[in-house]
Image (cartoon, rainbow, N blue to C red; front, side, top):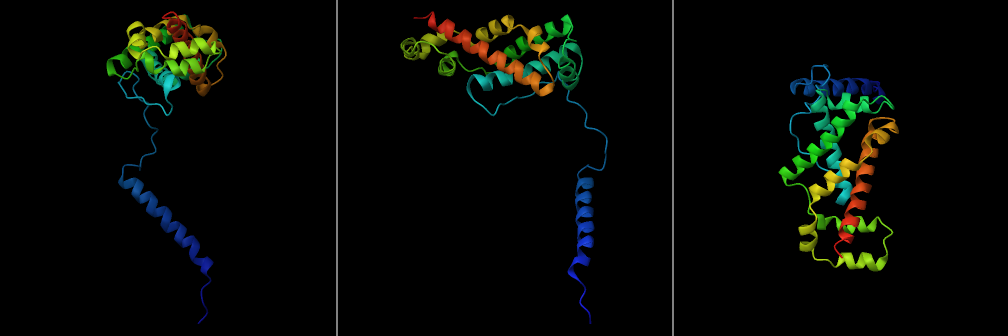
Length: 203
């Protein structure tokens, strides 16, 4: 009897695997091809970051802030980021809503207890500056209790947001990823500058 070549069974095996995968998807509610509904930006959600320090803090701030902004404007987060990424088309209402959305994010993080004390951010801020080494060393030996009594993280963030030139920032945005990156980078640098300036005043 002539042996059947092994390659003949490969198409049959492939069909059985595909059928099996589709069966599992259908059993778990995956039989519908309807697009996934966009998330409601007004619904509270927990946001985490893969990085630490000021970078992680501002990344969370921007993600929550975009949700808060979208909620204020009664649009989805996706629609908002697409609109803001269209260079030169932002309205005064959108810019104002973004600033208030970022302020709302600070309040949410304060209420959630996810804002770190200012003392946790000082080393990160100093590492990003060209401050005189002796002055930086003097700042580093300040007790955490002194720093935290004089500086509140929410206050630093709110001052930073109020001073951001959001319109100029948005004018250089090319796409959604660029939007998140530029706002995060600008906020991060502003927070670092603000922290260093205000901690320096404690000496």
